[in-house]
Image 1 (cartoon, one colour):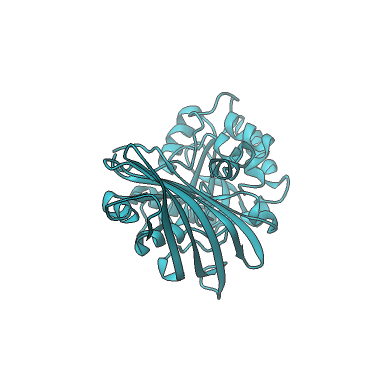
Image 2 (cartoon, one colour; image 1 turned 120 degrees about the vertical axis):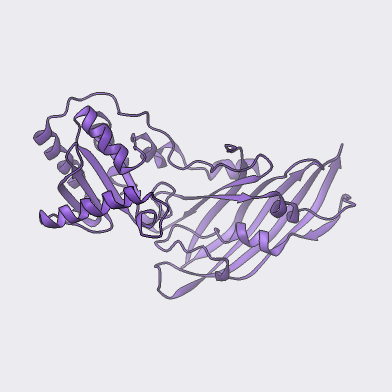
Length: 279
Length: 54
């Protein structure tokens, strides 16, 4: 949907001018999910009403609701993603409800943004994209990885730090980063237990006025299933990066894949430290 | 390294999803739909459509 109708100018313009738009991630709305109970009840109600009205109802769906929240139209994602179908559903709703076109009800904002974290934490932004997979590769995947001080400190070598010194970065913290080195797949179980082998090795390149710059080289090998619950397939990514730090503060880290392959297709990953909101 | 990281960031054409005025939560959507007399578009999906991990 994101690479199809939800990137189409006609759909975007109509949604912003005449609709109130909301999306939900199903796992947040399951009983153990993070969405408030009242939110979960609303989604359950909408689905129940949709079934009563004999609409198409399921987990991966696009719905049109009345202004006060009752379903009147729907499409399974397989239909909604086909060219023109979502736009047609929206146009039917406009014809029916005759909304007064205007500005979006709220300003559009970035939907993938760094999570709040302590001022002394390191927040890493990861982007991953596979090549040669058609629609699966159309939109890159992103992750936000938070390293608290007791974690990022394990990436650094013990003193004294001198030019030319090499060390192995902590395996558990490295795994917390490298476990997201997989391309866009329907399965997003990023359990570190998938990792079979990994290594990140640092080598100090320069120490200047207390600031340390180190090169990082390494790799990760894991078994990752494309679909949840299906057979896992091997994945390998070779990485290179730069780690920079000063004695009093958290480091900055950049990593990129040099070669990476999954299911016979190459993929690229980039990781970099970012600023983040502090709660 | 900076160049390689920059080259791999999603271009604007990959972030058109962010051009849509997504309201946080169904209840808030119903509140605004009622106030503005606008129908509601609701998308439900597995994974996280906002990060592409879906």
